[in-house]
Length: 130
Image (tube, one colour):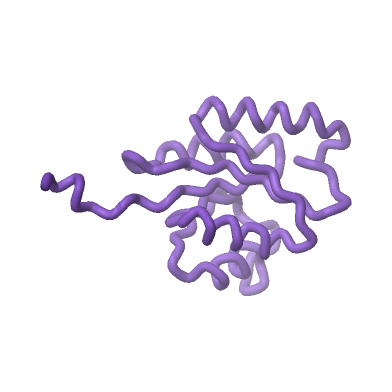
């Protein structure tokens, strides 16, 4: 058996995107961190009743996100949920995500989005892009 066959499969790399202006920057960072054989997920989760990517014209926003994900060979997933954090935690666990790339929270500290998400996923590495 060769060494490669003995290695456990690499967990996925998840890029959480929220806005059109930052999604390409975040995907570029995620792609640069991707390990050989690692699946790259581009995930956008929006609370039920809100617009995708802060854009009232949702088809255009979704097309933009799909194009960006395609440029980096990422699998695009768009979620709607009452609790964004619950949905992202479930996605990360279901897809065996090992690392999550996301933008810096506008409200840093112990109650920030990043802090709350990382507390729920203690075995996942977080990369915060300023």
